[in-house]
Amino acid sequence: MASKKGARIIITLECTECRTNPNKRSNGVSRYTTTKNRRNTPNRLELRKYCPYCNKHTIHKEIK
Image (cartoon, rainbow, N blue to C red):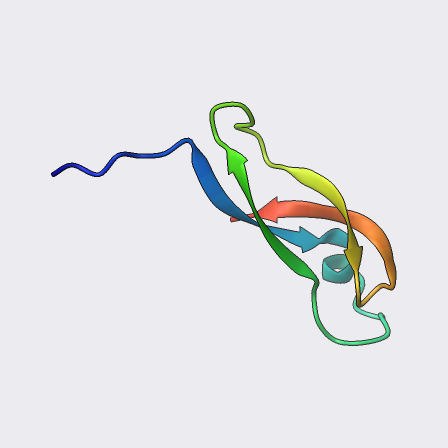
């Protein structure tokens, strides 16, 4: 039986400020998982989410 490829896929969002700032307060990078529809949004997703390491809302980008 052939497996059907669904339109929704699971993606990981990573904080951009934690990734680029080596002089931050604590070690770690904030990551969230979510789903997206690959037909409606083929580009990489960017959302504002809360980062517990930065203690503020930052841009989280989709990573591979």
